[in-house]
Amino acid sequence: MTDLERSTREGFASRFNRAPLGLWSAPGRVNLIGEHTDYNDGFVFPFAIDRRTVVALAPRTDRLVRVASSFADEAIELSLDELIPENLHGWSAYPLGVAWALGSFGADLAVVSGFEVYIDSEVPIGAGLSSSAAIESAVALALNDVWGLGLDRPTLARVGQLAENRAVGAPTGIMDQSASLLGRTDAAVFLDCRTLDAEVIPLGFEAADLDLLIIDTRVSHSHATGGYADRRASCEAGAAALGVESLRDVAEADLGRAAELLDDETFRRVRHIVTENQRVLDTVRTLRERGPAQIGPLLDASHVSMRDDFEISVPQLDLAVETARRAGAIGARMTGGGFGGAAIALTPRVLLPVVRTAVAEAFRLAEYAAPDMFVVRAGDGAQGHRDESDSLPAAG
Ligand code: GAF
Image (tube, rainbow, N blue to C red; front, side):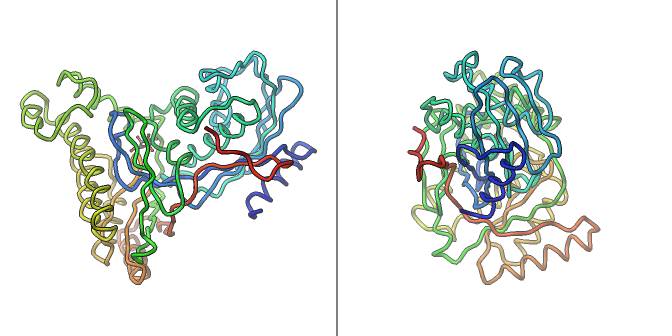
């Protein structure tokens, strides 16, 4: 048992005065490439990281739900009869939103049992590593088991997305939950967000002596407000003006016509999505044919596109990316929804200290808050087990 699993079990016991039925966990994610393409029916290539959220959960015999966590003092209580998005607020909207969303995927919320859940996490909050998807995926896996729903993992990803869209109010796509549920050690998830076909592809970073450095700028962001929804609306407006169902249906060869039909800003939003989809395909092909040391230019081009066309970067992210590249990273880009959060820098292991020092110094000179920097590795997706058995079969 890991330290985090032990502390989650203890947190449950001290909060609810009994033992949980079991522990379920799910990781945060890093997106290697493919940004804002998920809600445009496009391609993404994220991986689950080696930092997890653990939930300890036990059913009740009545209809009460009680939710507690290591990151909030108060426990939230409500009856399953009151479980609607309008009643869910703050951090508890993530776990409770999942319970509500399962009602759209086969759970009969009028008859299922209440439950108690305690949540602890080592996924940094606000760093752009999807601490939210980690909670949603762990809770979805736990309730899928405890309520006996038999849903497969792609469906559990849709449950988490629905919770995020309706209970949290962030109009996000399917990428983060898919990575958290489908990820594997040393591999990334190549996901077609239109068909939800997923392929797990080895990254080979270890063998190539490469590390993925996270540079968390500590500029906070929220996808429930402002820019994220605005970008999504621009994409939908662009698709409508071009007469296609989604921007997935626009090819690079169509961009000339798009430039004539669209205003400059909408055109640049569209161009980011179209070229980013192609960069995901190129990254997967390059990785397979030439290895991870060759994908750097695609990461760099992705950042430029997000900075100039999609306009979701911030000066701290640009500085992190430029400095890391100059200090020896083979490719770097902001990752996640943007407007803050983290950059990634794919770095030869021997140059890690040089890159870290250069970025820290650049931030100091610019008088920005010191960034938080750490290496992440691709880890396994969500998993869980009840106490009385060693392990549960994978969902689905
Ligand atoms: C956030 C969202 F949750 C994802 O669905 C995705 O759109 C991402 O931003 C941008 O690629 O993480």
